[in-house]
Image (cartoon, rainbow, N blue to C red; front, top):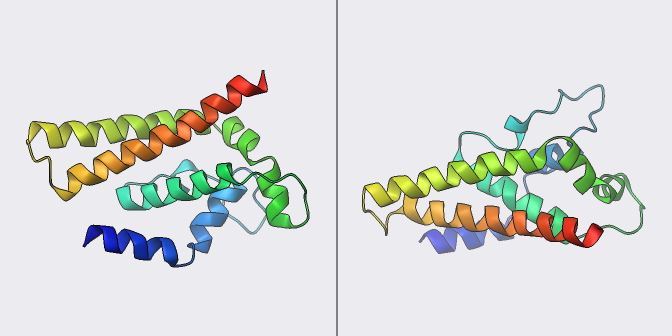
Length: 140
């Protein structure tokens, strides 16, 4: 059941509010509230994982030509993400994921939904962090 729900969520269009909060980061207009990391990573683990999917999508589809407001934001997104402390936030989220995983180990409930979520959360975090680390290596 969980896999079918996850597949359905990927087909449904992206939540525009979350997408634009992530894409805009520090680039806020006067009519928008100031950026906070709580807009991206909040207490609801599933919303945080959804945000990580959006981040993964942004970093895996680089923009080489600025043609719209969205592509302009995508063009320097990684730099803005890092300037806003994004890598530190990823480390915080990785600790959170490890804590969730540890909880499932101490209860010895390896097949529970929370254990599966923790595994997926860790996988997402490591995949995104690997992308940033490789980008830093190749940038030098």
